Image (cartoon, rainbow, N blue to C red; front, side, top):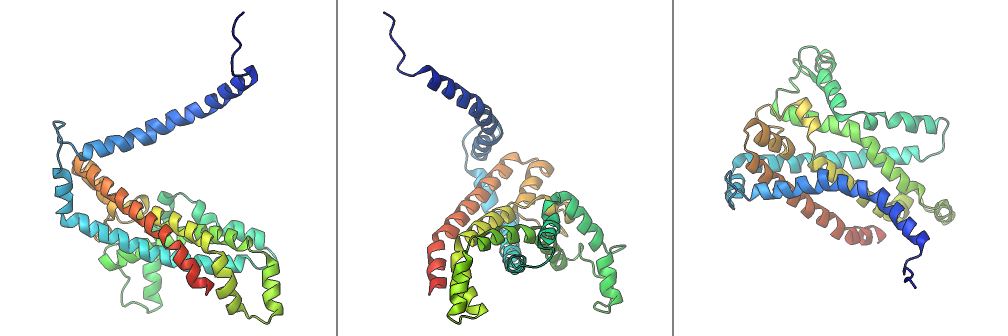
Length: 297
């Protein structure tokens, strides 16, 4: 008699169906994510002839441009994420209140975040242009500046400009994630604290912030990862200029790879950037418990 299969037919069909759905995703992820990553790492350790070398890493680690781009990336990430988290938290508190038209306001509030970054950066470039942009001339007409400022041609102002544009776009994103954390807090806890005579600030410090630590950590993680890899905003707005005043790591990698045609140095720089991001993720997650204990006191 023929042997019966150890796996029932209905389970075989289920397994084939699952495999049919998962296989395209695995193939797509392998081709467009895993293979480019491994190829990039391989290029960073090879010469033009394909031999093993560490010269690519020596080249970038002894390059002043690399360390300048690292400093610009870290400064941009810390400043922009801090501003966005603070303003986003304030807006989340406001949007969490009951008032007429709250749903419509939440929808309108998300428009900047929904816009493609390149289109948003093009709009900001128009607003900040010295010749015809409204912002420089508005400051001049209000006598806040002696002449229309060169926002995109002055190093410090160009750096401030990319922070303003990034904050305008991503504050709604931060507010949305933080609002989700606020709405997860039971209202009964606030009512109990109000019965005990706790004021608004005491509730914020002892209840709201400690219970929002998970949402804050997730928001910080997303925003730091996005800020560290920012490219399209800077490239459209300033192209890394004036000079190299806004040349963060992502535009610097693009410049190395496509402008200077130094593919292996660009690969080594991208590997170093990945190491930075990995260290950043570890720091954020390891400090989560400390932040929780700090606000729980």
